[in-house]
Length: 367
Ligand SMILES: [Cu+2]
Image (cartoon, rainbow, N blue to C red; front, side, top):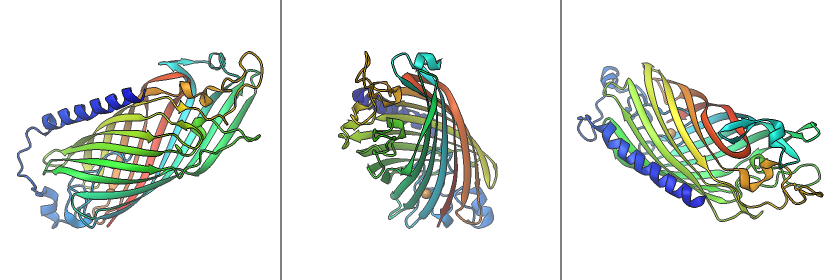
């Protein structure tokens, strides 16, 4: 599975690379040009929308708030951000079709029925040079999962706490008047717990754990473009999460790769709407946490109690469609944004809970 994810990630990088020149065609502005219609009118006081130096952002409109590491800053730029993300999961899938609780209980004593994941993300960005922007990001997680057993009895479990912490560097590959690209590499430290337990001391299933337990690499490649008048902007980002080695409980979460692309239309000097399509694929858990609940007796003895605790049915792929709204201050570097979406396609190693919808709200301040 790891191999196929690597090749998938490579493919995505190639696709983005191939896409960029064709979308860039027609750009005739001189390299490094910072000419900006609105700025010339307002003596360069407009912010990141057109990229004047005031907030030390580069000269591209914002990506939807769900895109991480979408921009870099000019030398000395500083930014603080808070994001709240919510994901609602409901109903089990096997392949690309929904299955009922009875089918989800075929091979297991218990089945998840729904899950809510909430994430509070705190981030700080700083640019030591025009070429390099650093970002430190941490998050606080709240998870809740509903279960049903073969007798039809429902129960639920919760976990909450700080997740993993990521330090990333974003390096500018090129920056032109109407397009730019940067490469990112993040290193995620295993600060999140993998010891969330149920009554009785057994571990909660994989999706309820707060961290990966491993050091993770998070490479990304982002390309941004905009029309000459800045009314339209677009971009794409290929990214991956690669889990290094195996954690203290003898497993490694499945690697993932994602490709996203968006278009955004400016409504006014301080607002824009966006539409985004994202494809993500992820692998099974490798290894196994022996503290996860297993069937204690009978024909299924030793088997995972529920699919969510079974390392072999965790992989899947999903295509999401999302809409967003960006609002920013033309006076300073403040921005408020929201984005919400739902899968248009999901194909999961099942039984596995499918995603119903997700939303992000964020606020950013840049100096
Ligand atoms: Cu920033």
